[in-house]
Length: 335
Image (tube, one colour):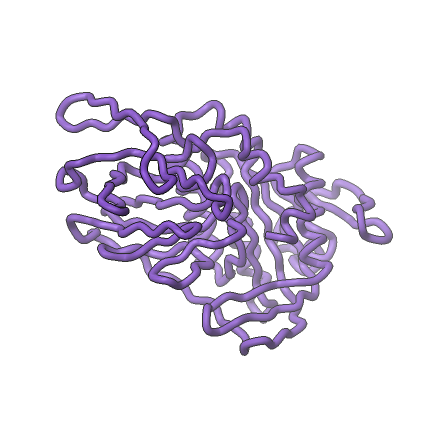
């Protein structure tokens, strides 16, 4: 998150300070309409308590309390998350439990500073959670419970990891996608709809990226960073993912994305399956994302990426722009 905070001024998390991911009160339908009042819980947690967990298909447990999972669930320090953890170790928007058709749940870390842990292992991509799994956030541990097995389980693509402590300079394609006007969106939607919308969008981006051989490197709250080491067929994969994301832009939420090509330092720690991408080109792609936002464009392409893609995409030249922290001007295209 350090790079993202430097480049975008902590945009996603700082904006989240004044927004509500969930309301203080949530309505659940159990044969009749019942309003459950959010109350301050013991051990520094406030959230939804249901004594009859057996009536729910999925729920979280902690110290004798249950938190029903009806659709998507946001977890964080902000007062109006579905589950609130009042700890300085917890980000305002920390994680989402995303519900899919068939009853499967995925745990997504939203670029938190201190991480989200599943069964004592820090997660770096959405992971499928199963009955009995332990979720730890900011020192608070929840047990995930599910009364029935999900009917379908999505296959997860595991990216390659370099040797522990090693770094390698690799020509890479970089992609940053970001939800437009996230603060306004969060204020206009009920909490359950917002959590569903954001969670579904993150999963859609992940599926499209991985379907075309990309690797999601970081979830950024209201955005995502992905990369592709360059190879013989990578340009075609980039053309395909651009088409897929442009198609996704016809649905809510509105989002923008930018694609760049450059030399990136890649390093990883194999024991935790975390891979880090570094260097000025990573910094540059975030600058380009900020630029296309200022220009009101929905998708952007750097000059370097445009040259590599050739006739695989149709692009419109926007101009040459000076970027803060970089010498000279950089060509930018719209698609």
